[in-house]
Length: 97
Image 1 (tube, rainbow, N blue to C red):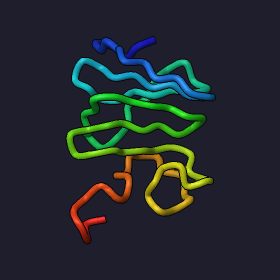
Image 2: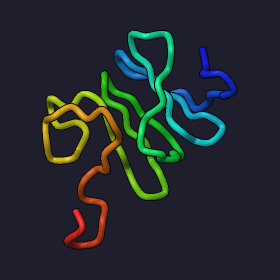
Image 3: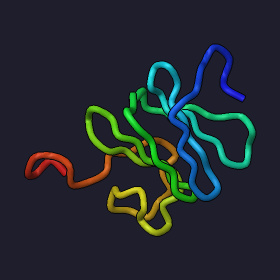
Image 4: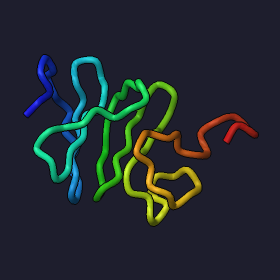
């Protein structure tokens, strides 16, 4: 069920999770709960991908991922789970990432 006043589209499914964009290109994700939760960070995405309990999105500022990170799948150089989107390393000018 979409959040009140929101239309969801661009559904991305993967493993145990799903995400979709709303009319403002904010990401909404859910897994075991029937109610989607908005990804924090005020990012606006062009597209989304989900694999297991990890989600990623492409924004104007690059690739961002969040969720389960036990195998380093979020791409930020750690294995700590990331509850909010973090920018994937290796996208900036030399010395930025």
